[in-house]
Figure (tube, rainbow, N blue to C red):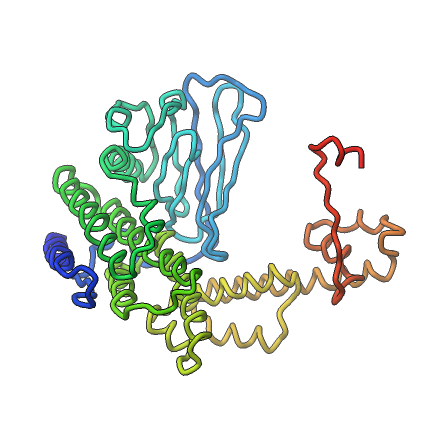
Length: 415
């Protein structure tokens, strides 16, 4: 661990001495220690059971958890009612160790969920009502929030670090992209004023508190990936402004930071977002330069099998959601020949079968239902996809004008 710290710190310090220059562009380090074991995607879940102290029952009170979905590259929120005693229980899907946000906006807890675990969580929401970022007096309080369960130590360590970090670091970096700096100047600012001080803060925290390996891997990955996420988002911002010329050192920096991360056991949300963005960048860049292959560019940035597999599953998921139909057989075989992870291959086959059944069901309904003049067939459809297909089938290939009125406005309600 310390060899990694010294190597990375030395490079970061050297990096700052070359503002807006190509060299040094690459950040190198010894591999991080891994705490989560081999990565194994699977159908699994995380259960959160807990209670809010001093709970005041209110109509519509809910407890929510947001979790990263590896199959769609989306953050998905799940919720459950809170009973009159402040108790709640919620089970959410988890295909691998992933970032979870526990009642964000109420208790502001961000941690990592381990598939199969049950988290026992208690907190007093009143303690967070005057929550303010960058307010050290707020985060120096003693909170009654507690985690229990098999990974309680890890969750408590993450919460303690989050409180110390949020009361220390300058959150103004969110406004840096608005300055529209040249690409290398922005890169240097992110590395020197965000990544380096955050990394130093974390390493000092690790030395002082003797964190367990899983906590260290999670926090190190989070800091590295947040920096890379900022770099990729800024790249797309400049592209949106038609600034298509980038210094080669910019993408070398993105790639080198990404390759520091341990790729076993845990892939952070920001890491996967950067992986997705690199694929989008490869497609966009090659669209402007026909001499470059999008696949070869993407493979340069994402050389590992799991990265390629995830990018393919995101592509398949997008196609299913857009067409609400099964894939053509040739396309299905093409995807299955490329995806190596057995869980992702099984997922593609299951979704293909689902849409085949949906297609057959809708086709059968079309034989008996006169659309819009007779809506009785709608009652036989049991999913949103089937209803959507049922309603839109007569208008495939046509331009449809929709006149939508909001019933919250007087005129619209009358209309």
